[in-house]
Length: 193
Image 1 (cartoon, helix red, strand yellow):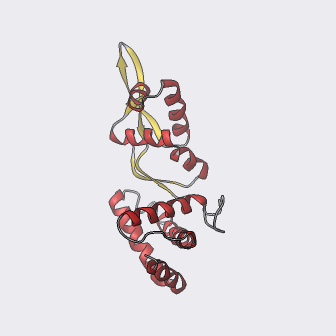
Image 2 (cartoon, helix red, strand yellow):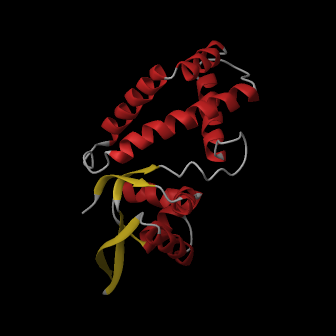
């Protein structure tokens, strides 16, 4: 049975899931279950390439065989996602680079947020120091928030994506309010915008 939200903690599984072609495959499978040939056609790639990516996604728990269809009397497996939403929650001890104690992916996400905020008219030319500080705060708050959600995972297994976003946002704010040092750091950052 397909879950609404599946939490992926394994760093290697996350690396598999965020690769560009695999990410596109997962996006297509969110719309409908598809065969290798359908995915190959949609992504303009050869079937052997799609097959290799599907096998990686299957091994990592992102997709599964969920049926079959016949094309010219030849059966083809149909693949579908194992969940509607994948929440990546890597172990925070797996730090690759960047700010001490902050995973590289967190810094990249923060850069994207800063760039997007700039496009929306909130601050321009934000310094790398501010991005590093934001990454550090986001990493700490994300860990606290994810820990709470993971500890209650069985109780909230059927949560929708919208509710998960709102829940994460509220916990994020509550954790920020409980920690005066983080709150002061966040005020300093927000004044940069």
